[in-house]
Image (cartoon, rainbow over all chains, first blue to last red; front, side, top):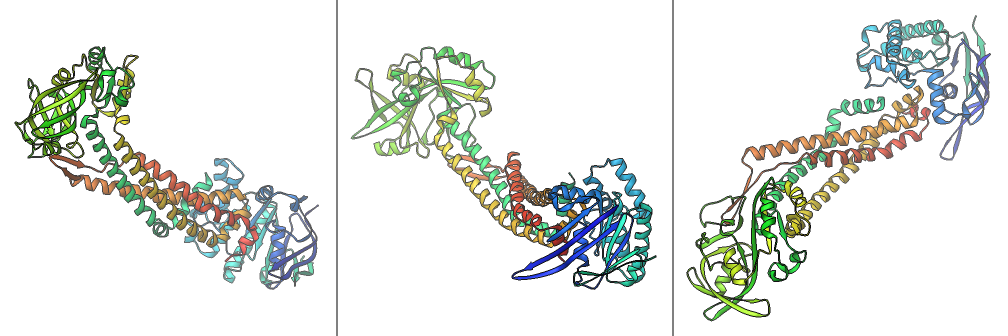
Length: 228
Length: 408
């Protein structure tokens, strides 16, 4: 069964009197456990489509089902719960909360789920150990390197055991070597967690980490190919 | 709690910025706390002075109407059980003194001059006049009636001796040792008169043009009263008033110092109204500054809101974080202002307070801001901070998470 079903999705932005179509009539299905890369140059609509799939933005037209749930029919509060329980997010600029420590950043999604203190501690410490940051738990994110920050973000995205992990340009703020390490970690952890990974990039080297590459141009899917 | 924690850490994260924003509130509230402490002590001092100026903590009469027009017309308000009530009151804890008093309206004549005056009669050991030289603190079990410009106070055993207000003495062109004739009307329109020797001349603001004092026995004898029309009660403190009043037997009438010190009550109310107006102005300035700051904070941290929303925080969670932040900033500013205010007050007190001389009376005012100033300043400041953050917070949740995430 497909985890994500996108059917005839269109996204139109209105800027003053000008209408700009960011995503045009996109349809695709992503199976559970797949590793999919949305690839394309800036302005191709890959981030917009990723936001729609991640339920942080709404399509102007079309249907989208995530794990059988029509996100467009959920209230804002229920959509927040749905995102929290179903998805993990990794951002280009890491987007860690500066006033929280590394541990607290990873713990935050579990707090929203009201997971018990003991279980939170256990899950966060396990994940921090997996991303190699066990010794940095009490440190402020501002005192970490870019690669370390992205590893914290990966731990935060996976701490709730989400079915879907969304990553928007996860290596764009990192140098090539660090980006490669981060992608390897992301793929490995995603594989061991058994979750579905959808990420956007414009870098062909990063796209190589996907099992399937969906190429976009001017808001449309121009190619959808699986890699063996 | 997680929202409060986030808000708290954000407030502490930008210490300098937060402090700079809160300077107006801190300085304003520090000044307000000092002023409030000064007013509080000043009014406490004035309250005690008013009580000892002839009002007493409590006045007890035989009939309710006495307090309307009986003070100088005691015949219509007999108080036959006054001696019994006095002895009962003396046994109450916290009662310093219970004594009878009376008064009458008289025409004073001396040579070719005459004038009206009000004569109050108190027991001699309950009247206190300050000497002309040297500063004094009046004893708490007597009425402080003024400063003697000439002559001596009435001594126990003295009768038909009058302590006359300076202005009245000037009108009569009379001096200490002179004999003035007082005439008053008894019940049944009977006119009576008696010679009084001027034993002393006193000054007291707004009193020495109106009053003369004699001993209680002379006053009662002259006006042919059968018993005391009113009892004056002095207590250990104002906190005892309600308890002592509650112990009074049924049927008697009483007034507390709050009912009788009307000028004090009016000025007290006026000063506290001024304090409230100043507080409102400070809070309005804070509201304006904090609203601007919180607006900027919300815009600067748009991506943070987007991230929190993406992770699953609901709109009301974001709203709570921003409003908490504003509220905490307000409360923090108020707390710092209050601490500074208390520090300034302590410094003033350590230097001996503020001394005011009024004739022979010395008034030393210390600045003691009460603990109530903590609550009346912190809570409104926190509420204003929260209110200032409300509109920026609504702005933060109006955008979709993706719009917030796009902000750089």
